[in-house]
Amino acid sequence: MGKEDDYRIWKKRKDSWWTKITKQVKPVHVIGIAILIFLGNYWTSTGKINPQFFFGMVIAFGVLFLFLIFRESPDSKLIPEHIIKEIGYEALEEKRRKGIEIPFDCEVKVTLVG
Image (cartoon, rainbow, N blue to C red; front, side, top):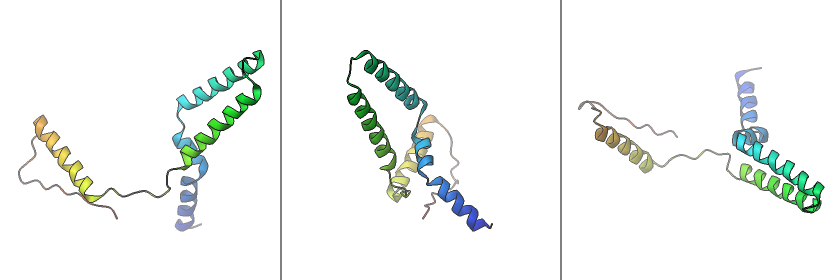
């Protein structure tokens, strides 16, 4: 197994659907889903809501969750050069306002990837 195979395996794992889900899920989501299921189960067992309605809502939330996870494009987008320059300028201005001294002869380089 060479470096190319290692890279392909890493890339495949990085772009897998499970990795996308685990990056997006936060503890609040897990707790919210658990509360939704427990409350829904309680309400369906006491007859407050129709079981078909409850399962329909769970499926709808699941589909919405999956749509929100997979809607972002897999390609990373580059930041335009004018925005990078503006970010650098604002960072330097903030240092100047705070009184952080920047030597007169220092050079600030912004390198653009790609």
